[in-house]
Structures are given as structure tokens and as C-alpha cells.
Amino acid sequence: MQKPRRIVMVAPHFEEYALRLSVALADHAEMLLILNTDVLGGEFAGRNMPSHPRLSIRHNGFASAAELTRLLWTICRFRPDVLHWQEPSGFIKAAFAGATVMATGKATRTALTIHDPVPHAGRDARVAARLAPLRRFTRARVDRLFLHGPACADQYQRAYLGTDRADDRVRLTEHGVLLPPPEPHAPPDDCRVLMFGRMEAYKGLDTLAEALEHLSRSGRSIRVDIAGMGPEMDRLEPRLHRLPGVTVRNMFVPAASLIEMIGAASCVVLPYKEASQSGVLAAAFASGRFVIASEVGGLVDLVEHGSNGLLVPPDDPIALAAELALAADDRALRERLSKGAAETAATRLDWGRIAARLLADY
Image 1 (cartoon, rainbow, N blue to C red):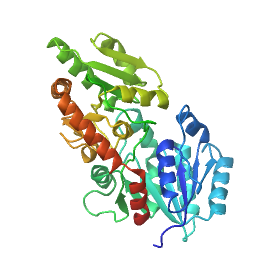
Image 2 (cartoon, rainbow, N blue to C red):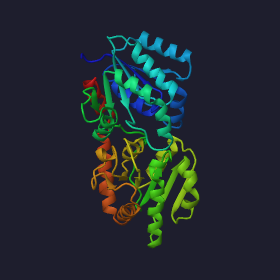
Image 3 (cartoon, helix red, strand yellow):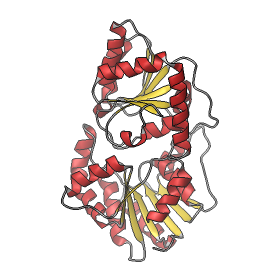
Image 4 (cartoon, rainbow, N blue to C red):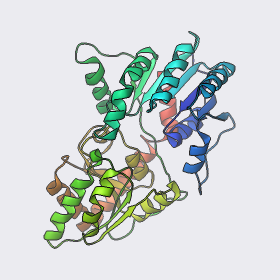
């Protein structure tokens, strides 16, 4: 295919991801980004929003027939070479994706970034079950499918194709940095651990709680901040409050505040029971903070044990406790891992590099 000159990016979710990718693509093509600008504005409250002279942004709420009509008209008027969706969740938004993919002519190539090849356990699985027919419909009709690394591609292959055939439309892409600080600064001298995000069952908050209880019984206390909302936070908050050194914020944390919290931490812990790829991981690396993460899903494609983070078996609180203690006791290790995290952010997770590869793969 000839290098695309005009690209429409549609993002009913993953607003910061889509914006940063669109800004990088605008170095090479005329870009139109369609998303909910109210959500985008909220995500960038208190911080500078990236922009580009060749990037235009249009609002869509993805919630009504009128908005679908406006979306189709906006795409048609722009006359893109490529229509690229960030895969939606939610029935109406998924219907929007299917309708626009069907409506594009043969002159427009279509692409879909699949952020979660298979649904996470808990509420995500229930939503995804209702969406499955629509998602299959759209996934089957686009020209390119982008997935975040070999593990995610393997999840997609096993769930949708089995082992009989491969999907030659699949291309790999990286999850670029999110929540970069205005100015990077060094981690604290002492060890401070952070866990943040949407607290669903698959995030392994219970595994972290048990690991910290094990350390407490051994006479160890590690400073840990836990921030976010979700059913697991509600369920485990009383248990977490009893642990020495643990601070719990059961609340929505704005992006600007999250950046400050990541900067105040030595590392970010991801004790996930399952995973695709992770915006939390991308945000940690953006600030040069290493991670202690479960050896699951797409996390293993990015975390190199002993280089930019530490990997532990999933749902193993004893192993997690051991790695937390190791990080707390070894400042030189923390410094080496932090340097590795910053290098990964500047290379593999650089949006300019990601955009250049995406253009070659369209």
C-alpha cells in the first residue's frame, strides 16, 4: 500500500493513548482524531495536552443515532486513506465501529487496535459476552489488526482462530508511554511502592494484601500506597488499613495527581492474575519507575527481569513478598531497574517509533 496521507483515528476509549499516537502519526500524515473531548479534557486537567498542526480533533459521544450519522459524515468528508479504530467496549460503541467499517469504500483501508484480545475476569467478562458477536463482526472485516505484543497476539489466535490457521492481518505494536511527567526526577532514596488503577479481581489486590501480611508477620514493614476504585478495593480496604506502612486511597485519582504519586514512588507493583498489556506499566516506565509484576500476558513481553523490573509467578504472595523485600533492601538494584525502565520508555515505548512502524504496517 502507498504511504497513507490522511488517517482518521476513532477512540471511544483510551483517549490519551489515541491522542499521543495521533500526534506522532501527524508527523507523517494529515490526522483527524474523533473521540469524546469532554473525557479527553478531564484526563488532561492540570497538565499540557500535546498537539500538532496537522492534527484535528472532533467530538463524538458515541451514544445516539444522530452521533453515528455525524461520525459517518465526518469520516466521509475527510476522505481518509486509513480508518483506524481503538476497539470499543459497550454495545452502542461497538455498533458504531461495525457500521463505519462496513460503510467505508474500497479506497479506505481499515484497522483496529485490540487492547484486550480476551475479556478479563469479572465485570469485563460479562460485558464482553454481550459484545462478542459485534466484536467478531468488526474484527473479521478490518484490513489490519494491531495487538500489543506476542502474548496478546497469541491470546487472540487461540481465542478466535484456534491452532488450525493464522491470521495474516495481525501486526504487533507497542503500548506507548502514558502520564509522562513534565520533568523527570530521580526516585526517592528509600523504597516506596505504589499500586494504582481500576481495582478488579484480575488485578491481584488480594495477592498484594497477603504478601504484605506475610512480610508483617516476619517483622517487615514496607511503605506502600494503594490508590484507585473498584469492587476489590471496597472488599479489601479494611484489611489493607490494618497493615503497617500501607496508605489506601479508595477514590478516583486525577491524572495530574497520579503523575505526582508515581514520581514519589520507587516502583509500581502489578500483582495481576491475568493481563493483556497495561497502561499502568506504560505510565510507570514513563516516569522511569521499575515494576514488580506478575509473569502473565503481555507484561512478560515488556518487563525484563533484572533489567527494568522484577517478575513473579501470578497469584503467589510468598514470591511477591520476597521480591518486595529484595527491592526494599537493595538500593543499587532499584537504581539499576529504574534506569532500565527509563531506557525502555525512551526506546520501545516512544510514540514516534511506534507511529513509524504502524505506518509501515497499514
